[in-house]
Image 1 (cartoon, rainbow, N blue to C red):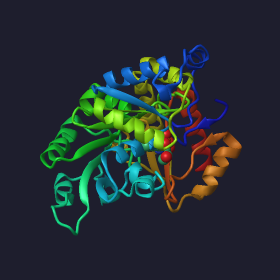
Image 2 (cartoon, rainbow, N blue to C red):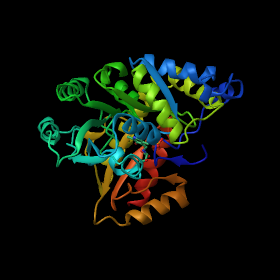
Image 3 (cartoon, rainbow, N blue to C red):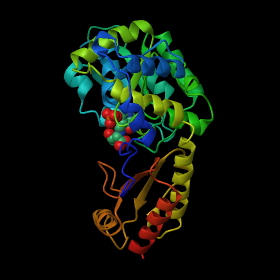
Length: 348
Ligand code: TLP
């Protein structure tokens, strides 16, 4: 990469190995279920997460939307965090396309929803109420810091879901970051979930795509939903080939991104006008605030980083002084050093 791009791990380019795998991927028509590479990716994804079946989708947003539309009918309700990507950053798709009513709960600083709040949010049988169908969690909880959510907490939410005959969906866009950070297999983190969507196109570096996993019956239904959303992708094996390389070679190395995020955060914490809570740096995200009395505004800082240092880092959408820097495959130790030196100069 010719710039140092810390805006997100979505910006990652595919690796050479991915480009080679894409060039030689066997393909077929995936709408007929005949693309061998897509089939392999779906099976491998399901096995990795301990589920029966998988479905290759175009994006994390499509994975979450397909799950919500498969679990819920019009007028049904899903319980979801106020800070969750599914609520904040998915263009209201589940409401617009599925008529699904979101029941919003506060996200705690540790990324969880309070168990009591979930219990209280579940509707009783009353003609006045929507019907609660679904609970959604996010792991890692990206919008508040990239916080990994433990298997023990998820099991408690799963138990509530089962007790009330609800489904549990996990937006696991970065589930492998959580698994690596917590030192447990990803399958353990989602054992209680009815569906999980995870992204190939973030820290794992594939150019496009996410996989939705769940039971065979759920995925059969989700295939129909994906088709209705225009997500039947034909010779998608070209893309799935990169996804297979991602699953086979890019998961363990996420630990390097976490170490680089830590180094970046420690360096930033030592600079003036930077407010940062080190205890929240647990995976590949560094959130920090620019102090009000800083010699540059957030916009000027972002602009000067871009123009003078070829570093892309911006205030987080919806905030004015809060920045999010995300480390990934294309950010190594030398890039971290360059960013810290640029920040030191601009804040002097
Ligand atoms: N997140 C993007 C932006 O949309 C904010 C980012 O840069 O982090 N779930 C989570 C937790 C996500 O962070 C994202 C993307 C998605 C779902 C959606 O994935 P895509 O972008 O593939 O639709």
